[in-house]
Amino acid sequence: MKTLYFGGQKSGKSLLAEQKALSLAGDEKPYYIATYDNSYGDSEMAERIETHQSQRKDAFITIEEPIALAKIIEPHKTYLIDCMSMWLLNTIDSKEYDIFNALDTLAQIDANIVFVLNDVSSGVIPLESMSRKYVDRSGIIGQKLAQLCDEVYEVKLGLEIKLK
Image: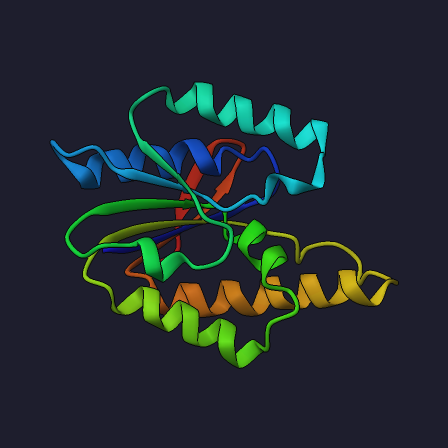
């Protein structure tokens, strides 16, 4: 089963995605793939990471992997990837074709995968080219994930709206 949760910042998507992964995992402990590359030295992001870690306590086995997601996912297990937006940032210099291939590879693995993606496409078109590229890629990746996933949920104000 492949599931996508997407929504704005602080919409509650990670918590709902965690609950979904736990329900899919049954008696086994699911894996939490953290995609943030902590080499930026961003103290605010460090606080966000600590909040996520305390929220999930020891309910997950955490794996930090900023790029090579398919290499660490094993069949017949359950994974939460939080988040694809950070993965996108980490792969921003990759060709769009390679990004799609990576997503197709993930979709073909016989595992439960819950994806989390920030919705950044509801604002104005950024003036700066790298920001435009990021927003455009985020929208394209969101469309591709929605196509590949069995279930898709939009999250607003902590409420999930099932789209697929």
